[in-house]
Image (cartoon, rainbow, N blue to C red; front, side, top):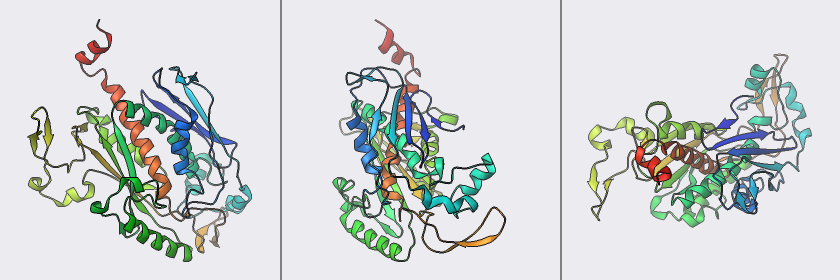
Length: 368
């Protein structure tokens, strides 16, 4: 199966299915000498695992990670790092019915048309559990970026019609609220909205916003490997993401140039160039400009809902179905850490690529 590898210099290759023996990732390009243990990875996997809140599937998986190569005496060796998370709570019988029909909003039909065969147990590779490998690999990228002074964090910006207010922004709430919203009032309102969705056996969509701080100016390759283009590919590859924005995003199409351009100025200490505003979201011409990189991912509602739905089976009969199983009423809160992971993988990969863009960079490393 093509398409399971991401990155050029810092790469991940994910593997496994929702109801197979397990899922995991092989991470290559990790420099030798990075202190790394399973707890470094587990912290991030715990944020996306099932059962983490009332609004997550009740599938009882511990999602415990095993590092099986590439680390010796607590340090990376420079060789590929393989990590595995075993499935322990499969209930494949919940999915036996769907072998004969196509669930609305899922990849059942398209997988059948592409491969002529599909793993119908929870969607196989199209399941949200595929993101385990992304998060495990992203956790390593995040740790490397931290050592380079780069910080990134994502959070739920909106759920259904409920949006956070930035004057109430409290970063500490991201991992404390069940919605992953950094706004206590918005969290309460969104929770009430989700409770109503659950009573109506329905689901909701929402938006994840990610902020990346202290990326130096100059990261990103012009033309096809622009930083925003690569971030777009990374985030749009996450299942259920249907739209992507950088900076002010969709709003810029309604503005005049005089309203949208970010004016340059000199910082207060007069040592560097900066911008007065950040409509561009930290990227100009596909290259980082030193400002905060701000991106957003728009997630569709969970397609597995318990309402009666209409579909078609393999015999081309139109039928009514009621989906069984354990499903999230909303994908967004558990997807926050996935957006973080894919953003970190992208930025680190392009920073590694940038090391050969100037002679003075090469001299810094090699000339004695």
